[in-house]
Amino acid sequence: MAESYLDQLDAGLNSVAIFADRRKGKTEFLLDDLDPAAKERGILTVYVNFWEKKSAPSYCINQGIRRSLERDSPKLFKKWKKEISVNFGLVQAKASNITLSNPEIANESLEMLVGNKSRVLIMFDEIQHLATNPDFEELIATLRTYLDGNKKSIRAIFTGSSQDRLNKIFRNQKAAFYRSASLVAFPDMDEDFTAYLAKQFYALTKRKIPKSEIHEIFVEYRCSPFIVVDLLQTMMREGIYDIKEGLGYYLAQSNPTEEWEDLWKGLKPIDQLMLSKIIIPKRAFYHVDTYKLIAKELGVGKVSRGTIQASAKRLRELDILNNEGRGQWVFESDEFKDYIVTEVM
Image 1 (cartoon, rainbow, N blue to C red):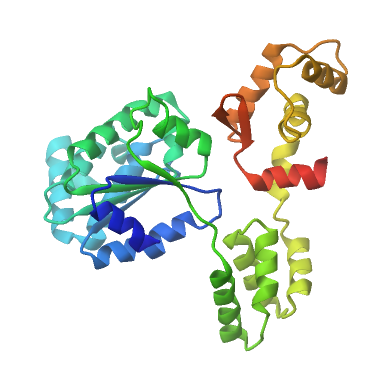
Image 2: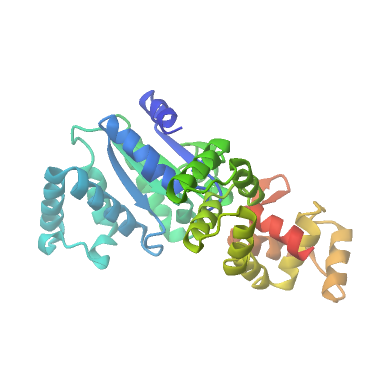
């Protein structure tokens, strides 16, 4: 898949935006598969994670570029430090939180990547975070202008775990990144992955676990690489070699649904009803029967259209719901939906 993306970028595609739920392996794909494959082609790679410092995306860009140059291009790194020192009066361009949060330094850092004799691939992880704050809109516009202006040498891969926020960035006609990247789903791993895990488990413990049993659990937990790997690591650590016994022990020690339970308990009663009584059963939002149902469940005399709209807006802002347009609302995370269906309803 990494080679396929690189082939597309080499053929002229400027950027790709990848979507998947959290804990599906997007970051590992970028760092462990795409990054080395790009370097094999002589491409300078830069990894930027917008969750590194959520309040300051410029800091994230600067840190990503600084690390890349320091690791892979010492001469360019030396030039980066000199340019930053001269232009911003920083002593040896110390990488402090304050200085690296400066948007102007982010611009300088990005420009440093242009014309360095190497093609550049910038991997922007959790790009949807830029849609959480109107203050970040200028940075989005800056990135769009930068990428458009340097198509010959700069390519970009974006990843995100919120379909709704990605749509705001790439599919909203008023957004700076509108139609600037091909938005593709990140595929789940398959039997090859669980067969590999079975092989690795045997290599480390000399105990066999049928790959079919590992795959069954993998599928049961929404093909989450994190959960199945964490389970097998726990079994190795505790000396458990039967996967059913291991799963029982693992669930007793570390409940994978705990975060969903906390999320559910933190919602307002009307928001809980919206999810369990309206969204999942696919009832119409703005219908008299919906208003009556919600009012009855809440024990109030009347529920208005505005009340429903306010709840939907909250659930969207919490990254729980994605508005696909034309009245179609879906869960951002199928895991949370599964939790509500199996544990609440």
